Image (cartoon, rainbow, N blue to C red):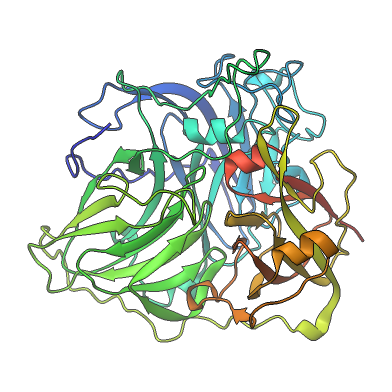
Length: 510
């Protein structure tokens, strides 16, 4: 479906107000509901799910070290918006069709508040999953100042719940960041970039893919989903009126599967200042930036002296990535910046030469190196599915790092896909990627490198919680586990992969 571009203004999610705030803690209540929302003026209103009646959900802004309690409330209907495949782990017919559990992606948090996939709950907490522990989650916000996001994480239906609209921004700031004099307030704008497809009546389309050769399957999970329309903050191809000054944009790829390689049609530089886990040591002038699902990057775009210009944010990443179809006129366009507002005040914000130190983790401190494969398999119905370390979700826990220990994990990608691998609880640093002989590994289980180690790209050189594991490469990351013990997960953030077995638990032990 082709819809007119730049017809409607970019919505900016409202800042959520707490129910209670004092010097000791802050308390929020956040309700999930179904409602109708206009995603484009040429479409009928679309039924979506969202937090506090909006898609994306309201932005939660906190300070580093602030103790925050959130009661996440499921007020969704009993029937899902999309067909459920009951052959997928955790989504069998003996559990409620609509289940939710919220994960603040990138949060440093105790495991009971992390949004474990089997800690789901239904409306009014009438039914709960086997790992459900509490109705009110606690966030100590011990991470860096950073752009995080919250989204649903229920086992077996994450792809459906997030696609329905259950996602929002969670921003951590601190005094050090305030002193840098970055663009702020009205000039600090989060951008959640996603892809969707629509039915003629304006409803969201998600394929059920019934396979007539398998009559027992009413619906079937698909290996990947890519929509034919790009949406930013809940609007199709919006425009944003800007002043001729510097703006800070917090970019998030909130798609199920689609990767975005972002550039500006003006050819001008963007100045990257942050990765997933917070500010980088130095800003980086870039012409394009790659974002896999769940990755974030903060950039400053300078519109000074560009009065009257329209600048289009473009995308040229094939989908599925890296060997899928090229973008078309629709999927190659993200949004437009229209430099038409008068300058309201002198722009005194800066792009600092130095922001904060990001010390490299010393490889000499590593107590364990783990070699973990990314595998391609076929199920009993002949459908493709992916595994981590060739193990399914329900297999016994095999990764049990000790609290305070430093480890290197080596992702050996035996598939033809790029997988965005996300670890809960911790931020890590990317060491390098190195090509290897996949055929030899499959035959002999020996890693035979066929090229030199390539250090992480400059735009990845900061704290990360999601890494692109490229096909035919070994990707190495290094991290220190803590400050909490408990049960967490690591998984591919292509949600169709995550929902069909490409997720594993890990336990941080004492």
